[in-house]
Length: 205
Image 1 (cartoon, rainbow, N blue to C red):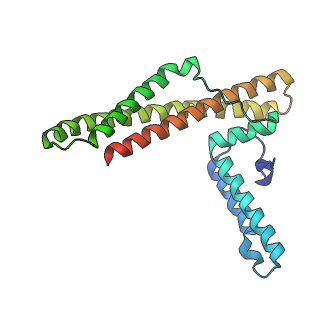
Image 2 (cartoon, helix red, strand yellow):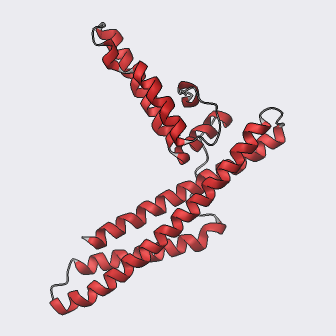
Image 3 (tube, rainbow, N blue to C red):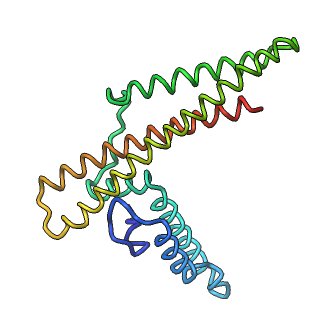
């Protein structure tokens, strides 16, 4: 597996600042861009293109907090974070709320597709707008939950970088376990955010 942190000359850590990462990528990509070898042999051009594509993939991965955390965990533990199919108990109430509102939105979309009566359309419009408002409020809450999780990653990042000077096996293991839990939380929040956004778009059509 390619170490994207090494490729972008960044320390391997759970959190990176987006602006600093962008500056590093622009500097490295300027030197690695395939246009710089336009007079080279076909083999050299192919190598330059491959190197540039890998550099871009590294940047896209490390720029996304969830994907960066996944890559970090893979490198540190030697395997991908486990995918848990069942929603954790602490997320069950939030999951049920998202599911309920998405089902209501689905029902409204289906209803809109078959209604022809102008009177019923007016009544449906009000319900439609109410559902969009509820989805918008829920989307903000999901974003808030996501931000809370990322703030915890930032805090753990400080512990990780400080502890790297003298971290013991137990501390390291505890940190990696919590980071894997946070990765799963971010995965849930990203999925819920996409589901909510999709319903909002459908209701707005």
